Image (cartoon, rainbow, N blue to C red):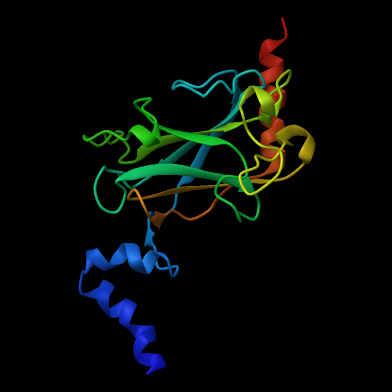
Length: 203
């Protein structure tokens, strides 16, 4: 009996029962969004879409490419960007926002999919808030609690010395059932981007 229950989800997916996917997602069965390659990492002062007032400490901009075209249809009715220090254990430990190459936010995914680049790939970007709270700001400026289940951790990508792990994920209003492979940005790469940013700012 237990074996029959174990193979049931696989059989349902095999026969294209998309209606079962949200329920199966609760048990860890997810749709793969494939692998996203890191093309460039930089530190930028702002991001092209509204950043919810997190400007001030800069953003870690991670430029990605993928052979996959994200669309506003199954399995990505909406798309988000997970961000945490490696290993990726919590989708929202760090603050990250994603945009398409048309500078439209992940949460505002267009009905029309983004265009394919001449090389056959699709371009995406994830912006990670470099430090929270940003310099000169406090939790109170954003209304975020310091403790409890909804607390936003304090962090600084420069000072903490950790690799950053990212992931593109999506689903419907109630379930996450589509995830990419984990994208790793080594700490050394972050510090190299910092040095390059500071060199550009030097007269």
